[in-house]
Image (cartoon, rainbow, N blue to C red; front, side, top):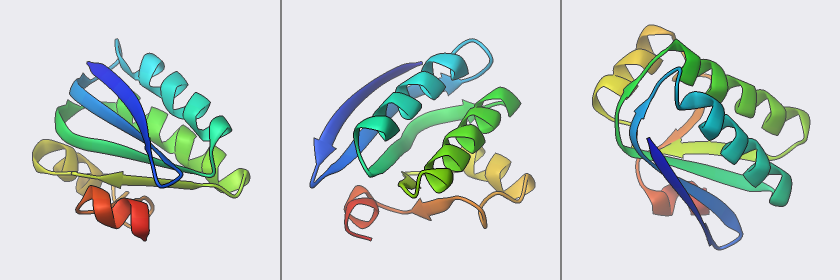
Length: 108
């Protein structure tokens, strides 16, 4: 997994490429939590992620809880395929804020 960050209209966007699994989820969690400290809004681009395991889901939930506790925004976009299926199976699509596009994630 590789990730990079950029800022658009006050929102930190974390672009993720590859698989989010036990080996990579701690790094992603740290990146997301550090981004959350620096801004009021973080959006994660999952359009290039084809696989996520339970440790990846746990990391996303931890960041979601931290955002909620600190009254900040955490949104996902580009969620498709296997990642969307995992979120649906775990019934997390109703918990996470999920947008289709980057523009929606930034402007919502």
